Amino acid sequence: MDPTSLTYDILKEMFNISVGKAAKILSEITSKKIKLDVPRIEFLDSKDKREVNNSFSNIPDGTLMLSSISFSQKLSGEANLIFPANKMKSFINLCLDEDSRDTGDTDFTDMDFDVIREVGNIILNSIVGEMGNFLDINLDYSLPEVKVFAKEDFKSDLASKEYFYMLMLYITFIICDTEIEGAIIINLKTRNSFEELMRILKKMEDDLDD
Image 1: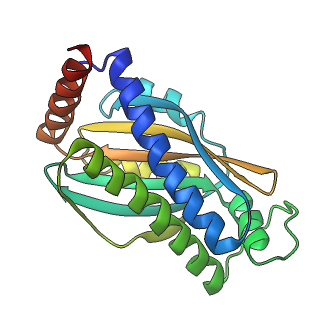
Image 2: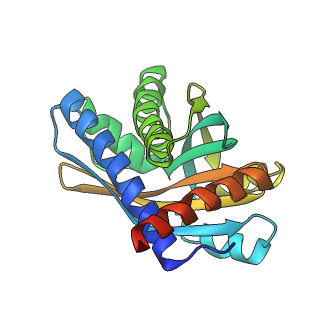
Image 3: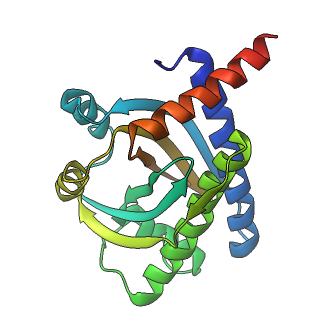
């Protein structure tokens, strides 16, 4: 079953609710105004290399900071939070009340990784947790892992793994008027996971039409 326009609307509402909750938590922790928004969503067939490459062209070039968690139960897969590394360095500095100018610096300390690990934990737990709540299914998920990748290396790493379908969420992160654009990629590992997601969403669509 192919996603309909209503499918996208339902998912966009679900994900904006989840990132809104994450933004509220982050704002309280940092004592700074933080806004997260998901302006666009795409479904990608991982075997359609042209489609995947077109979507990846929207991710900034250069070094990326990646936070990932795995989830299982009714849906099985992995969620990846991706931002340009230099922008995340500016974000970390803002959180620590240090110089937040974008100097292109992508050298990260252990404290930097701790901050990003906590940010990734909050955002990805909100995304996966709200997905489970919204779809009324139980999901188990792991603690986040944080890595720094060159964009091409990340694409190669993703291509080396077996995923059936990918859900690309373009995300905008605003803190103290500093805007960071990134993405969340949710990889569904099996056909069953994709079909189960579509079945639940179709039922929700039917309920809305009644």
